[in-house]
Length: 424
Image 1 (cartoon, rainbow, N blue to C red):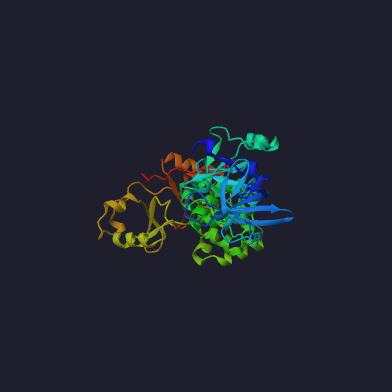
Image 2 (image 1 turned 90 degrees about the horizontal axis):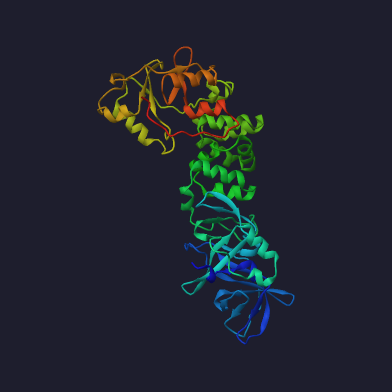
């Protein structure tokens, strides 16, 4: 869209509202747009106008045109109705201008220095946002400067923007402006950066817009202090759900940073299986292999048929085994026999027993009290993507992935995430 067709919202504030007889009836206070719509660009709902000492509402059906220097009405008759906020509508000047937004195209938090509307198919829509410093300077200048078209290339397309609502109870009930599908394009690390940069209310709204499993992936990437803040800001039930979807070692790290009372309350709200896995990690010092291993391993008996294991994996939630690289095979007493690469399941016959498959190299194991350095040396020496943590009597306790070791060795350098590869 050409910048000459864009109209600055900031430049319109205080400009005259003129009826059909060319008489000024008031001054523009704000423009209201419909948020709850399938349209990429929110359509105009109406205008808030100051008439004398009153603030009145003019619906879009009575607006003939919005120009850079004035709003013109279709009629000379004016129905002076007071403005009442309605569900699914947003005031641009009050609720969006100078507020935080999410630019999903560049995965960043921005602030609206100005907003732009334009005619699309005969109707007025919100089409762009300027986040540059120049727009702020222009607003501080003379009125004529504020109404100028924006510089070429300075306006972000609204289709790639997410906007946030006002606080609950205000009557507006705002939601994310753009399609939530845009959020699916963002990687967990990018979402984590957004969550860290947003204010408290905006952060909670973004979390609400995400699938719990996706939110959990993003929380795993956050710095401990920010993650602790989110757990405290959320309701106990929300925080417990986030932790349930996180990897047990990541959830344990998060719970180490909260006070004992909150930790107990959160664990009590989580499923028993998740609680047991997390408490297993918490029982070890955080600077040991047991303290940063993940207990979310897939264990199978030597007597189990391949078809039964495949069926078990298919029944599990989609996100439960996303980092699975091998199957832990144990004997009837639960002691480790093999660390079976997942590729072996694709090569095996349905009727094969796990104990009969060619398991390749011996499992690489470490004791739960081993240091991160010892675990790293084993991983490197054996050229593996993960190693197993086992008890003194040979029972598997958990698995340590390559990025877990990096996080343990360099805790202040941010989260590392390597692509998952098959164990060789």
